[in-house]
Length: 245
Image 1: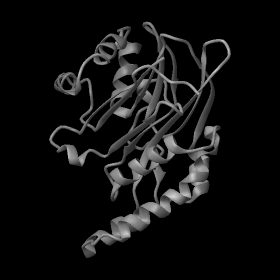
Image 2: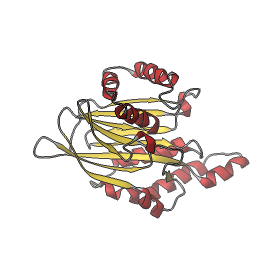
Image 3: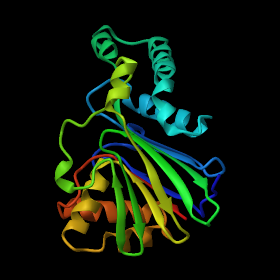
């Protein structure tokens, strides 16, 4: 196991929406070395609940190999259905409930190695991304590595989808290694796209992000709103989980 130093989390709902309407989710267990973010799709029913179930289950999961993660999805689908169906809902919500909720998902598991490095595995469905930086350099980006790859129809994990569909959509990356001083950044799509675009343009995206590690939630909100005002960041829920090694 690896215990990262002072992981930080930041989140913000899309502009014009209240905090209670935020539909991303994130979770972290620094002792177990497990972290996750999920981005609930706007089109759907109780997507925030679905995103929360996905991340909470991943960080408390006992399987050391993240490739086993899809096996947990059917039980989560049952929990989502039981929670939703126990609520009093108007008749016109029945169609939405039958279609279910959808979310992009990214999970990260870390373990110590004998040479002071850390090994990590990541599993993802969709366009929430893991970026691994060292100084001003981007070492890895997963599962998307270019800003142009982001679109309106990412792969998603569905609360009603067959489990085989989740297995088919997942992408596993098993060869990550980090050393002290590196950073691992888990981001939902809007922020990940901005970050990759900055890097592709030759700018140092890490300067702003590094400053945020010593800032508070209000500083993150102001920074995010400036990017939105400038047109560089899509108006979407934003989640950042920063893990200094």
